[in-house]
Length: 418
Image 1 (cartoon, rainbow, N blue to C red):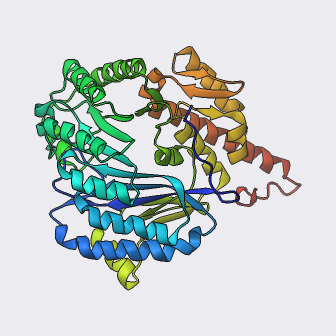
Image 2 (cartoon, rainbow, N blue to C red):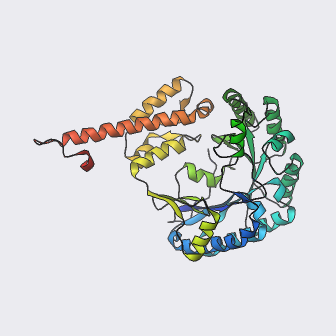
Image 3 (cartoon, rainbow, N blue to C red):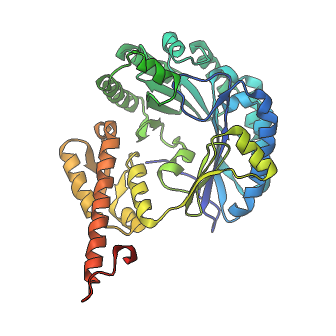
């Protein structure tokens, strides 16, 4: 389903690298990612920090082969091709980078040009993800996007002329003032540009953003029913255009799925660099501070930059498996779940059968299940329900084991139970 991917070098597991570029020309009203506008003067020191951090982390990844590198943001294309090429060269120098690695650059249509794209392509970048968001000028203006509809077409033309063989477009439904008609026009316009991949997200009002303040002040957005109608129409339309839905919000022509993003959903290891970047590596999840200055000075002068760090126990991995795999069209499998969590799949499967009766889930193999497009619409609630079932079963098992260990003096205590 997810296309044929090159196998990593014999004996070496695959690893992804994410590099966060937090700089933007301007901040969009809905954005909750760690990004900054008007901080160009800090780019030089940040580049030094990234280069140093990549080098000092490399020894921990000696036993891995890097098969995906993803430059996200912020707006990586605004950072400049020279800095980006230096960073990729540092990865090549200090890591075992696969010759067939997927190397992705996020870009805004207003901050790419043919010269930069040619330089990036020559350096090894082979995939571009363009933030189109809408084909309606009024909708772009309503969220303060820095580009025009015309610039989207020009950027796609430049990507093709630079000989990139893979590019993606981002779209958002539920924007201020958006109607079903304008959403359909955006999707059709995106398809006319012949992308290989589409990421289509429902607008979320994140606390602390300008959009959240606008909504609090009374601005109305398309409601949940309108977003649901837009989503279901989009799923059907993209399928007719030959796009396979492989995750809640992601669609690709066969073989063009984002290999890097699949690592997140399939619990594969990756290392992140930059403020706010997350990692799943060495059976640990950790993240860095969401503070450009603290990260830069911490790396260059030896300060503390880790924000959160936790060893992930087996049972928690089981929860992550449910939460992330049910976002994908591949879904969950009884044997995979039991292997990663050592827990019984039966209570989960019983609940999935109930979801199936509501049209939210379907069986796709002997004991493999996935959510349907209608299930994806309420995935947060469904997955939360399954996680509650897992916790209930875990507590039942714990109490059962404790009861078996009771002697004449009573139980040994929950805190000592295995």
